[in-house]
Every structure is written in C-alpha cells, then in structure tokens.
Length: 124
Image (cartoon, rainbow, N blue to C red; front, side):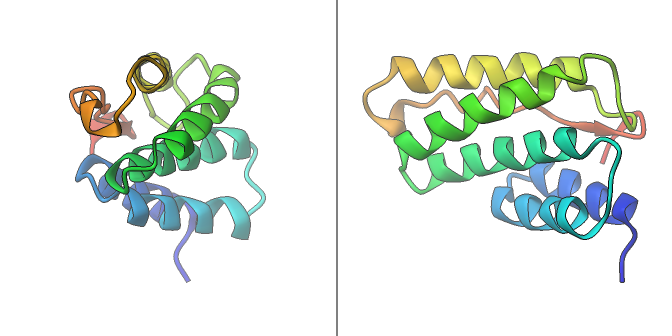
C-alpha cells in the first residue's frame, strides 16, 4: 500500500501531465484512506482535477460546479502546504471558474488556465 505522500505526489504528477482522471483517483485514495490534517486541501485538489476532467468530456456544467466547490477549500490554505504552491493554484482555480462561467461552449475553454502544481517545492 502506498503512503499518502506517495499517492499525493503521483496524483499531482498526473495532474501536471494533464491526466486529470488519474490525478483525481490517486488524490482521492490519499484523501479517503488516510486521516490527513489537511484533508480539505486534498479534497480541493481533487475537485480541481475533476473540473478539468469535465472540460475534456465537454461537460461545462460539471466543470463550473467543481471549480466553484474547490475554491473555498483551497482558500483555507493560502500559504504553501506540503510544498504545494496553494496560493498560485487558488488563483488559477478562480480564473478557471471565471472562464467557464463566461463561455457558452466548453470548447472555448482557455487551456492556458491549468496550473503546474509544485509538490515538495518542485514540479513533479
């Protein structure tokens, strides 16, 4: 069984590769299988990953809902946590939410609004 740190690292690495579904799976394993003091942060990252995944499935309403849900959770961790650049990720989550509520067609989504998430002070 992988440690929560391993699961989070693999999840963030998957996210950075654009494998949003896999990112969600690894992060969810860490979130659900372990009692983490920063569980809300991990849940926010899961929701962010699923928001991007919904865009790949052309589900704009799903993306809107998940981006909206992840923001309050990420706001709880404005400082770096686990070496994750939370403030930057939060800013990008806000931009992604603003983008999906301002477009009619999910194909218009601005894919430049995807953060590169650091973990342990480096992009994994």
